[in-house]
View: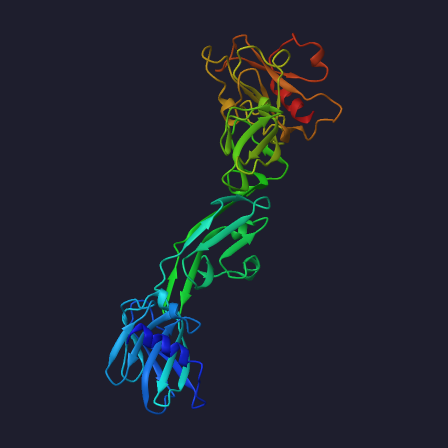
Length: 438
């Protein structure tokens, strides 16, 4: 059909019939990109002379796809023809391999022998095969209660958007931060429980696609800083340790990332930098307050915990070298409990000078040993000792013994004997029994 004929058809469109309503519907109803679609016509009546198809909202020449003369089968393409459209003898329009640009309103205008026209309207929606969307974000790691989470689902074309968190549907408290179209997720003052894997899914009637997981990290802490003993039992504020034994203190906290640790002893920083602190060979010099300071390099927050470490109540350690022990002596320990009556020195445990001298008194082996210059006094033997009276200990007499094996005599120092520290005499059996009674 010539262009003049098209112009005539447009002009004649002002004379519409009042017959049955003409409708247009696509087959298939929800086509995907690449499908072959037929815009089927329903409600045609009478003997028709021509069909004219428009791909647009009005009967405008700019939207003209093609015109078709029924008697000759001649088809004339218009400005909106893409090369994929063809008019059937029954008036339907075939479109081969539709694309997204074929979506929109279609109008069919018919002309009968009475030169009357009818118009039918239809709509074609071509759904694209959705590509995998992508979750875009302002940051992959945020600080709890300080930063804002901002996620966007990036996908071309119209589609329904759903969000997933750790593989499941997005929790309601997080969904409250969604934009009306569902593509943007905003969360002010992000929480630690919102750390995890986020995905967005786009869908239409013919296609569904989900993004790769986006992993969000939320930094927090340190919180609940505590010092544990031997990594198993939570300690109180004081830990008591037996003399010459070891102790390991562990510092724990709730923190992301893992906290950095600093240890102090009586206010002085120790060169440690680990989450645990070893105390070996416990002595009086190691008694005091141990503090662990946990620092989070991401949140810039810190917390601390302290414990007091003391020697056990079972042993009293006193630095008595000037009065009670001689320089160079390894140990001078005394059990003040009553004697069992044995012929051995049950109340006396002495050690000779370390590294030399006569052999150790055989009774020394039964009592715990201490470092040079310290006297160990078991408290168990002080039950009969008056509270106001100074603790009685024995000291070593360096003079060679005239009888029996061993490296020296043991001397009992009582309250009266303290005033005369240089008077020494052998401790006889009656003295030992007296010491036990005192």
